[in-house]
Image (spheres, rainbow, N blue to C red):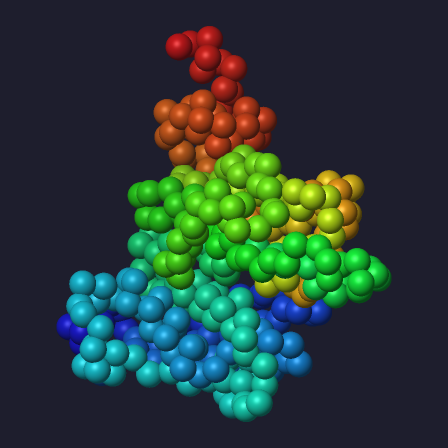
Length: 340
C-alpha cells in the first residue's frame, strides 16, 4: 500500500463540499496530505453536529473516507490492517463528522456518503484528469408507511386502513469518470440494490406508475455525468400515507470538474405541483401522486469536446434532449438526422 501511495505526488490539498443539511446548509471541509509514510485527512473546519439525526460517528467517517481513497490509491490491494493503517483521519470532536454521544445518527448516510466526493476533490488536484467528478452519492431511498396515526387525519379512520411500511432503495447518477461517462441510477459509494417494484407492490397498497431515466440530469462534459431517475407513485386506494424523506443534493447538486457542468439537483413534488422537503416526515394526501426526481452526476471535461457520435447516441436514446445537445454541447441533432 505504501508503494501505491508513493506513486502519487507528495503534498497537501484542500477541498470543501456543501450539503443541504436538515434546515440549513452544512460545510464539509478537508485537507488531504500525501507523504512518504502514508495519507492523512483532516476534517477541521467542517460544520458542527446538529439536533437532527444526520450526524456521523467517527467510525463511519473513517470508513467512507478510506473507501474514497482506496478507490483511487491501491484499489487492487485487499483491505486489512496493513493497507488501512496507512490512512489516518482526524475529525474534530463535536463536528458533524465526529458527533458526541448521544447525538442522533440514524441517518448518518446522508452526510457520510458524501465523503468520497470530498476526497476525490482533493486528489483531483494531485492528478488532474484521473479522478471522477462528484455524484449524487447520498441514497434516495423512498420510505413510505400507512395505516397509522397521521397529523390532521382522523385517527379512528386511519387506523382501520391497510397498515404497511416499505422502503424502495433508489439512486441518482454517479460522477463522470476519466474517459467514461458516469453510471446512471447507480448507488455509489453504497453498493445497495433495490428489489423489484412488483415485490413492493405485492406487499403494500403502493402503486408505482413511472420509473424512468431523468432526461438531461447528467452534467454535461467531455464525459457526461450519470443520469438520475423519475419515480412516480401513489396509494392505490387513494388513502393518505406518510413519506420519510432523507435526501440531499437538492440545493447543492453534484459539481462537475475540469470544465464539466453540474448534474441536475434532486426534486420532490406532488402531482398537485406542491414541492416537498428533502428531509423529514410528510403526508402524501389522498389521490396525490408523489414524484421523486433523483440527482444526476457531475460532468468531467469541456462539453464542447465530447465526441459527436456520443452526443448523437445520447439524443437517440433520449438521455439528453435536442435542445441540451445544441445548447450545452454545440451539437445540432436535427442536422445529424439529415446527414444520416
